[in-house]
Image (cartoon, rainbow, N blue to C red; front, side, top):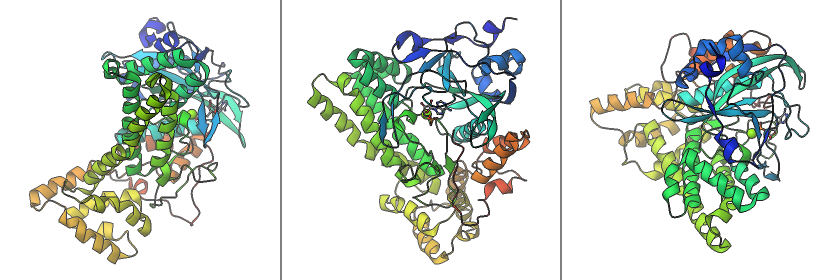
Length: 490
Ligand code: AMP
Ligand code: MG
C-alpha cells in the first residue's frame, strides 16, 4: 500500500491562489516521534484510516518528517494587532500549512502543523512547542466542538523526542490541526499593507469561495464577505460567553474569517462568574477579560473593515460608509444571538422580557456563583427541586426574587415543563474542562502519564450526559482565593 495515496489527498488551493501570502517551507526533523494523542473520530470524518495514521508512516506525516505527494508545506503570512499594537509581519513562526483535505462531501479543510520549527516568520522564537500547550489545544478544542461551538480541531499530537527550552526544559510536540481555513483578520491586514488591491482582491475571492460562496453573486462581494464575518464572529463570541469561555489572546491574528475559534493559548473556562476575569498572565490591562470579549471582537472587526476598504469601494468615503453601516449592525447581531441562546439556557419562551435576560450576567456576577453549575442546576428547579441551584447562592433571597420572575416565563403545562427541562440539559453542559482538571492532566502528560489526559478528553467530549464517577469534573476547584492564571500559553 502506498501511504501517499492511501492516507491523504491534498489540494493546494491556498498556495496556488495566494502567492504573496506565504513562504514555501519545510518542517524541522523530529528526532524520535511518538504519537501522544490521535483524534480517531475526526480522522474518520476526514475519510482517513485512523490505524494508518497511527502507524510509524502516518506519524511521520503528522509530525512533518514525511511530506506526502500533493502537499506543498507553506508558512502563512499575516499581520496583526497584538494587545492593541500593530505588528506588520507575524505569520506562521512555528507552524506550516501542509495543504487542504477535501472530503467526500466536497468540504475543504486545512491540515496544519504547529510546533514544526523555525520559519522566516519566527523572529526571536524557537519555532517549537511543548507537549502541555499542544495537548491543551487538543482538549479545549474537543470540548468546544462537543459544546457545539465552531472551532479548529486537533487531529493528533506527536511528541518530537526533543526538549524545548521554556522556563524549564520541557518535552516538545507537534500539533496537527484541522480548520475550515487559517484565514484571519490579520491575513487581510497583511494583504492590504503589502500587496495592494490586486492581492487583497485575490484573498477576498479565495475567502468567499471557501466560506461564503453566495457573496460572489452579490452586488458588492467584499462587503457581503464582511457581513458574513461580522455575523459568524458575533455568533461565535455569543457562544463563548454562554459557556464562560475566555479566549485570552483575542488579537486580530487570532480572529478567523470562518468564525471558528482558533489558537487556544492561555484560555480557560470560568468558574465563578466574574466579568473581569482574566486568564492570561501576559494580559496586564485586562484587555481580554471575559466581559470585554464582545467589545474586543467589535474592535477586531473594525480592523478587518479597514483592511477591506479598497475592495469594498474605489471611492474611499463610500467604502467607509458602507463598511461602517455593516459594523454598526454588530451589536444587534451579537445581542440577538446572545439572547436566543440565553432563552434556551433558561428554558423560557420568546415572551421573556429583554431586560430580564440582559440582567442575568450582572446578577450572576454579583452573586459570584459558578457559571456552569448555575445553568445546569436550573433544570432541577424546572422539575420541582430548587434546592441544588438555590444552594449555590450565599444570598438566597436574591435568588428567590430572581426565580420568582423567572418562573413566570416558564411553560405552565407540566408536560411542556418536563420537555423544557430536558431541552435545558442539552444546552447547559455539566462537564467543561475545569482549569484544575486541565492542569492536572497536562502536568501528568508532561511527566509521561497520558491516562488523565485521555480521561479528560472522554469527559468533555460528552458534556451534557451525566455519568457516575465524574463528580469531580462537575465542580470548581477547592479555592484558596488565589485567581487562576495560565502561564503556558506558548
Ligand atoms: P500565537 O500567540 O500562538 O497566536 O502566536 C503569535 C505569533 O507569534 C505568531 O506569529 C506565531 O507564529 C509566533 N510564535 C509564537 N510562538 C512562537 C515560537 N515558539 N517560535 C516562533 N514563533 C512563535
Ligand atoms: Mg495565533
